[in-house]
Amino acid sequence: MKKITHIFTLFVFVCLPIRMANAGILVVDSIVMNSTPQSGTWLFCFTVKKGDNENTFNVPNKEFKDNGITIDTKLELADVNRGDKVQFEMGLDDDQADVCGSKAEDKASGEFTVVSKGSKKVNPRDNWSFIINYHLE
Image (cartoon, rainbow, N blue to C red; front, side):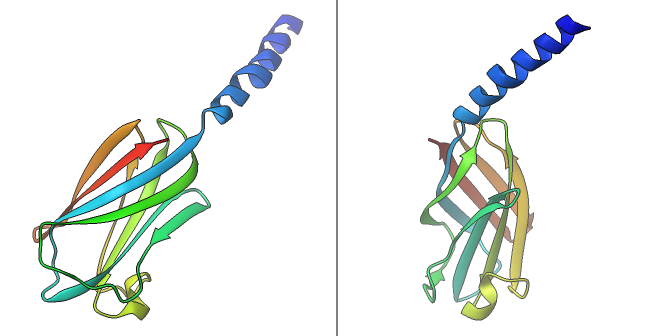
């Protein structure tokens, strides 16, 4: 029993700090809006989070138009490891007061498992498709 306790203690003090030391910064480089349900111009809000740790990209009153555009976000989220699951939320609206909240006209949410460099294709519904491009620093 004493040997098992020593092995467990060794694991806790050696292995867990290594995992914490390897924590990096998740960078959401860009969002490619292949198609949107919005007609005309629209405002954009994107939040990424892991637990209580979250960060949001929103340029107040910055209007976007059409489909097939790339939005450079460079959104950073600290303390993320490869293999972690992170959640995201996106809002589209024509009103700045609503775009980042529960009243956004069009909302999408989901999650992905972090790899060193990757992308996540999302199709919230038939007329809405986007790709999240990211890497881990």
